[in-house]
Length: 319
Image (cartoon, rainbow, N blue to C red):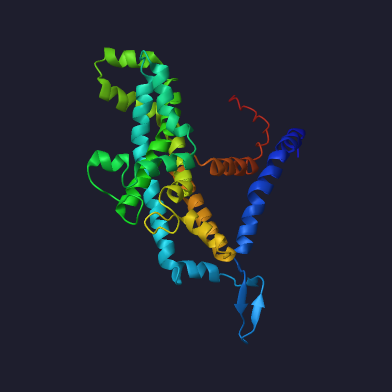
């Protein structure tokens, strides 16, 4: 290894140590715990066995095909539904917020601060606020003029979670898109107006292509965060509610009942789900950094040696 390589490894070693302790060790521990069953069990001879018992893949097979399969697939569907719907709404609303904040308004600072307030509020506090709005005699029922039990089982509970999460995190996408809008030169828009392009054409041909990389990163962050949704539906609707139970809520419920093996299995499945979604998203963006680095390394190793210099062939001059 060259001196530059040793220096790079030395400088990166603290980061690797932190990642190993904060990510690697918990992941390995969860994988190990998912292969065991805690508590009292009965062996083949009828004797009670206390402690952790190795069960292999029984916790995983119980998730997909056992008595808990229906609850798992319900939580999986809720997680996917919340992610798809909320992120789609947040992208549309967030881009609209960024366009409003980017305009040269007189009270632009006040508008930006008011739009970013929901994102600054902690999620648990936001859930309590929306629980007060969605209660039986709350603001939501007063506006629509009907009595809807928003925090009970049913479609209305899903709708309440979607509204609360969209209100909470749409400003996050708006903030990132605003940063992208501020680096676009105004001369580009002036040239487009001279050519006769309207506002819609400018947005489709200039704004959207130039903010697409930043928007893609914002969407990726929101997708990964929504797949791990826990505190908002837990506080807003409650625990063990079939309509809003997510994978993280399911894993937490198993762990709170001292079923650490199934809880670790649920957490492992969620980790694989999040990793697969992130990999597919990065592939769709065309940002395969690992693959590109691997190809460059292979090309460097297979670089052919320079051809040996040949002696010049003497020119034959006819007599």
